Each structure stands twice: as C-alpha cells, then as structure tokens.
Length: 327
Image 1 (cartoon, rainbow, N blue to C red):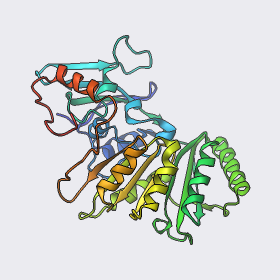
Image 2: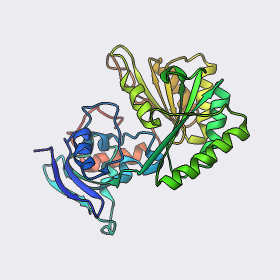
Image 3: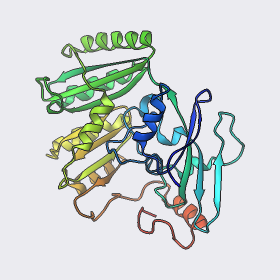
C-alpha cells in the first residue's frame, strides 16, 4: 500500500506517508492539528511522492524551502529489487551521503520512492497580502527586485497580468504575501509600503488571495489545448529574461515567481522560450502539452555527465523511466 500516514510526530515536526498519498489528503489530516506541509500543487490529484520526485516547488519556497529541503527520509525500491531506507527523521541525521536529496528531482530514474518523511510546520498565525497595480513591465520588475531586498517573512512575490486579479485597473500586478507571527508580518508590511512609496509606485491594495494561491490558480487554468512551460533562470537574471520575452513578441499568459527565478507561461511556443532561457544560463521545460512535445527538456543541463554516471551505476540496464528524462 502506497497511501496513508505511517507516522506523525507533531513535537518533532515531521510526518511519514506513503508516496502515493495525495497532498490534499495529507494537508487535511495535518490541519486538524494546526500543522501543514508547506508544499503546494495546482492539481488536486498531485501526490506527495510525485511532488518530491519532480522537486516541484511553489512561490512559497522562498519562505519554507524546496521539496528537496523538506525531505528527510526516503524508502526506495532500486532497479535490482532491493529496498533501501535512507535518512533519519530528526535534525541530528546520520553521517554519510544524503541520498534522499539525490532522489528528489530524479523523476523516477534512480528508484521508485514508496515512503517519505518530510518536515512539517505550524500553520502561520498571520498572513497578509498586498497587490500593487503596475503600469508596465519595467516598473513591475524593478519594484519586485527592490522588495526582494527587504523581505524576511515573505512567502511569495509574483508578477502577472492584472486580468488574473479582478478589480485591479492596470496591465500588470505585483502580489506580495507575508506570513508568520503577527508582529513580524505587520512590521514587514509597513516596510513594504514605505519602500513602494519611495519608489513612486501606486498605493497597494489588500490582496484577496496569496501569491502562491494565485500562482496555483493560473497554472490550474491551463486549457487542454495549451502548452504549459516552466522556465528558470538565476533570480538576478529574471528581469532580463522576462524583458527579452516581451521584446521578442512572446505574448502569453504568464506568472513570474520573482524570488525563485521562475516563469510559467501558458500557450507560448516552446522553442523560442527555451532559447531565451538557455541564453541566460537557464532552462525551460514542458509541464503539460496537448500532444507529446518534440523537446520536453530544452537542453542538457550542467552536470549531465555526473548524472549519467550515477544513473549507470544505479540502473545499468536502464530499467527505470527509460526515455523519461534527459538521461
């Protein structure tokens, strides 16, 4: 059985679940105790193991870390049938290689994850969001970069067309969310408002939705006939990347996760976005498509030789996920 909670240690802040457990079901269980796993998926059918295997992260990664960071223990079936358990659930971990981190993001190419232990957290006592109307792309990227320099308890900062936010009379909008202790959130929001005023930005509006939930809603709205792309560059290069897309008339519904250097585009042509990302040392992959795309991954990443060497050692007969990844 690959579903269900196997162990739950509230005081030690970890939970162990079958890899096939849906994230929504786990969150429902944890919510009863005012806890949560700080991972989010736009799709209700997403499993905890699938999110970890893909290392798929939402904007709140800036506050809580990535799926890889939250992973403590992984029980895995290797290609030769052996079952291994790597890691320990408490902070004082064992010495040696951190194998669970290797499995996060491996997309099933190294082993079949059957059970995982992850860090959990108390639900934030306060969450406040602001929406900043943005008149043009240059202002949105500049204001967003300035806000990133002062954020301490922010859990999301995204830039997106304001059509995704009813009531905002501007072409674009910045959505900033902070969460944690009430006094920390209040202090940060005061600083954010002061910074925006100094930059000459319009007065921010109260947000009715968090930056991460907005991101999830935009991705979930991808139509069956649309391609959904996920592009990533170093956060410092994100303004150049987004500006370059606009300059090359790549017009598509998008949401930019400014803190993590990610841009998600719906309905854009794949090849030009991949070229633009590659030119800045980044990548662009296909998350969803109406038909099998010619090139899912875009290009060979740095460290490919090392990745292939690990794959060859673990799975010399290429039993797991053949052709499913760049390996």
